[in-house]
Every structure is written in structure tokens, then in C-alpha cells.
Image 1: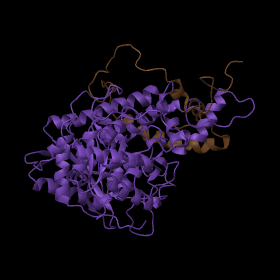
Image 2: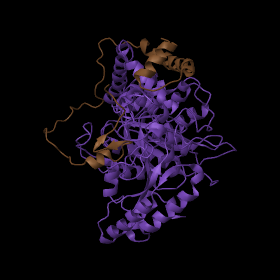
Image 3: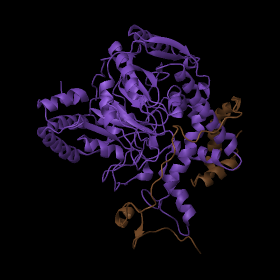
Image 4: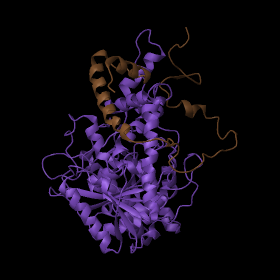
Length: 95
Length: 492
């Protein structure tokens, strides 16, 4: 499976990473190389094998649905690039 | 001998006897760290925190209530969140990030009295095998045999370099595909990746959550046992953390492996493997045999597929985990142009903040999880992963106690030498280690000898799940037999 320039552009957009048009051919080539390496997996007979969901046989633990912390607005916002009036600020989302 | 050159075990004993103070020991390390700047291992130094912790450790030692790690100066990989101290996973996207909380591992270490000297360089988001993807620049291996600067390996390259150069007594590392064991082998130190679930992942910046485990990097197997004991244990904040008691790993180091069965997997004999690696492996087999173990040829038939499976699963998980770096809650946000909306903010922020290798892996992960390819790549890789794990289960069910393999396909290579190679060439560094992450098993790298150039080479031992004590005992026997005492000569 090789990745063409249109697919590379689409993947970059899905990943929300800006890639300049001039860089797309090189990116497509690199991604294709990695995918070719992955093609080896097609040699393996996986009939009747369940995909692994947990590497150690354990059930995810549950806990009571209660508040365990809170009232730390200042800490939550402390590292924000733009925080105003107790909120994260972002560019206009809704027209 | 300067105090910073001590092992953890020797320093612990000297501290308890009052022959050494934690403050003096810490000062000795801080001096070594400043002199070690050419190695670029420590990227955020925390001398004030270190001295305050050392003074507290001395008070605790004086009161007689001192756990083994009390007063021991450590380096902490930049992947661990440390409260109020820069924690940026060697990425520009987390530039300026100072967590408001402390990771469980560092909390446990500090509760045990350990001293933090600073944060250690690494590959960006732990993605790399040579420490050349860091936003802080390359780490240099203290081992040097000609004019070239060598890689310490990766991703825990700063940890490996700092321990090998005696800048600290031990360091935390993390291992997703070999990131503790490969750099340990490249720098002549010991590194163990514990069983998945043994050490809490809470507060460790996530790369691939089903594969990531933290572990110690140390100057000896005994140190690894002591250090691992202090890091391990159940944590309600990590739902994959195992609710199991932590045994006394150091007590497991009996030096007796008589009657144990050591598996030698034939699939690890790769085409084109250097003779020196082959010879080292044979030497390791002889050492364990001389110690009374039985050497058994085994087969792990799906080994060949581990790397391609890993390079589907790890990027898939990374693409999800790294979605959180969006320029909203922490770290870098790109400067926006007039009229830019939220999508432009995400795309520009991530293009500026992530380095090339991270971008590549996020995009590969995005692709293999996208509609139409999910079954062909991601689900198939998870099935192959189940088969890789089954290979190990069958070997252990046959009575194998530990598996001996080479740790790396070569000794340390020169920084920049792989720059023009395609990414897959770099991925091959993890060929012997990545199976262990996929199967969730414990694995340890032990320095066993030097190659013809005079660079360290390591062997890997793989153990049964939750049997780190037994695994470390095997490693201890190998370490004693190998008698590896070489140190890099100081050029920095």
C-alpha cells in the first residue's frame, strides 16, 4: 500500500498537523516506506485469533462514582497559553 | 573515589553508618553534573530542591528511619511530571509546562527519601533510539573511542549517559519498545523494564499506553533491585496498575540459579548479526551454564513480526495520546494570523511544536486507525501481538525460567550517522527488545563485555510476568560472571 500526495495531505489534516504543499511528496514517500515495512504482517495466519485488548489478564477496576477532587481552577488553568476570567480562551469557534 | 561514583547499595550503607552525609553525596553529584554539561544529559537542573531533600534525608537518617533510597541522588527523565519543575518530554510543544502535580513514581521515590538532581534529556515523547529527536539537542555517550561523538541510545539517553558518567547514582527511565534496555546496553549500565502494571504510569507523559513502563537505570543489578522496589506498587490512579504486593527484590539476589532453565530463542539469531554479538551471546550462555543452569534451545516463531506490529500499535496509541497537545490547556500555542480559526490554531501549533519523528508517528497512527484501514493494520497488528505473547507463554509453560538474548544488534553508533537512513533502519535498533513490551514481560539489560572498538555490549534476560526478583537474580549471576567493571574515561 503506498500513500499518494492526496492521502498524505488528508492524513496530515486528520492529525491536525500543518504540512506545506512542497513537503507533501517527501512525507508521502516516508509514510509509504513505513507502511511497506508493516506489510509483513500480512504473512501471518491470524485466523481465529482475538485482537489483544489487555496485555496482562486483568479487569479494569471500577470505583464509586464520586467527586475525588475539585476547587482547583487556578491549578487547572496555570499552564494555559491563554486563560481569561477562569476559562481557557480559544479563537472564535461559532460564527 | 568520589562519592558520586558510588553505587546505590554502597551509598546506602555508607549513609546508614554515618560515613557519608546525603548533603555531601548530593554536592558531589551536583559538581559532576556541572562538569558534565558537554554530555547534555541534564536539561533542567534542580540543585535547590536536591539540597533541601538531602538535608531532610540526613535528618531522617539521623533518626534511624531511613528506607534504602533515603539520601540517594537521582536523575529523573523529562517524561515524568514533577511539580513546579519543567516537564516537557523533550518537546517544544510542552515548552514552559510546569506541572501542578507530582507523578506517582517520583512521589514514591521522594517519600522514600530520594533526592532529585534534575531532569534528564531524552528523545521527544520517547520516540527515538538515539536521542537525536530531543528539542534540547543530542545527548552524548560518555564512552568515546575515537574522534566521533556517539549516541547513548534512546529514548532514555540522558538517563543512560548520566548514570554511566557518574553524574547521579541512578536514574528513572521509561521503556515502550526498548528505551531503557537499549541505552543501558550502549552505555555499559543495567536497565530493567518491569512487567506491565508493576509501576504506575500516572503522571508519566503517555506515548503508547499499552506498552509504556517506567523502570530504573543503575550501575549494578543490586541497585536496580533496590530502586525498582521503591518505584513499584499498586496505584489507584492508574487503572492498569496491578494490585500485587511488591516483593523484596534485593533479597531475591541469592546468586543461585542451579537447575534453572534458560531458553535461547533461535529466531533472535538474525541474518547479518555481527560476529561480536554472536560471540557475546555464546559467552553469556556459557556463564549461565557454568553457574549450574540448563541451556535449552527454544522457538518464538512470531519474533520476526514484532517490529512491524509495534510500529502499527505504538503510533496508533501515540496519535490518540498526543491529540491532547492542541495549544489550549498547556504548552505552546502558535501565533495566529488574522482570520485563523480553531483548526488553524491546532494545525499550526502542532506543526511548530512537534518534531519530525513525532509528526511522522502521529500521522502513521492516524492513518492505521482511519476508516477503511483499521482492520487491515491496527486489528491485524493486535492479533499478531496476541501470537507474540502466546509464543512466550508456551515457552514458560515448558518450564523455561528466563530467556537470554542480545540486547542490541550493535554497539553505540555515531551521532548523525543514521541521519540519511530511512526511519525503518533506526527502528531496527529495537529488534531484540520490542517483543518484551508487546508481551508485557519484564526484561533486563546487563553489561557483559566490550567490543573490539572498546565499546560496551549488553545481553538481555527476559523473565516470567511478575517475577522481576527471579529475573534480577539471573541478571546478578550474569553480572558476577561477566565481571564488567570498565568505565568510560573522562573526556568531558
